[in-house]
Image (cartoon, rainbow, N blue to C red; front, side):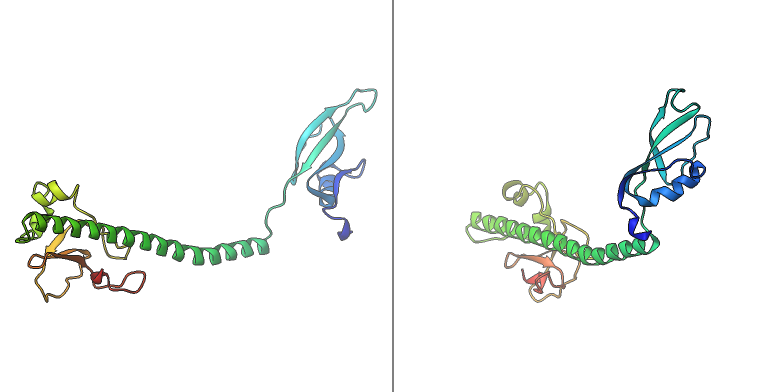
Amino acid sequence: MSTQRDKYDFVTARAVAKLSTAEKLCLPFLKSKGTLILQTGNKTDIKLKNGEIMKKFNLPGKILPGRVVLSIRKKPSGFTLIELMIVVALIGILASIAIPKFAEMIRRTKQGKTKGELGNLRSAITLYYSDFEGMQYPQNAVAISNETGPVQTKYLSKMPTVKLGLTNYQETTDIDDFNVGDALTDLGNWGYISTSGSVFVNCAHTDSSGNFISSW
């Protein structure tokens, strides 16, 4: 009989057993969402376990006195335990592949944005230097970060943000002063050397391409 399971669109039975037993016997032969047609007494307390009533036909008393015909749809079967375990395993495998790739994509995007902001900051300092006829860079980090100072009011719309996408580094607009030869403090912010007008990212780690971030 196993070859007949899940094979038919319609199954019907009459005078086989009580409703719950007839349902149990007949539903396995139906395809998913197939229909079982049964008749029962019109006063029977209808309780189904694996099917749901689509229509209930009350026939004229001359045809089937005291009887109703039920059109019962087979509910889609859920996952078996083995199938559920397979699904969970597949989700775990996909997550282990997708999540790191998604995180790496976000990291690359943030670092690309920071490179662009670094270029904007360098351009502003170059313009400042040019306006002073090559005689003076912004004298310190405060002169750059000052919202009312000439660097931001004339050459920048706002202080650029460092976004590295690395653990333990917050996005920041902070900028610190450095001298030539100073070691990085690795705070993940901007670094500035006033004697040369150099600006860089104060980070000792490598980017997504394996290059030192401070070398951008």
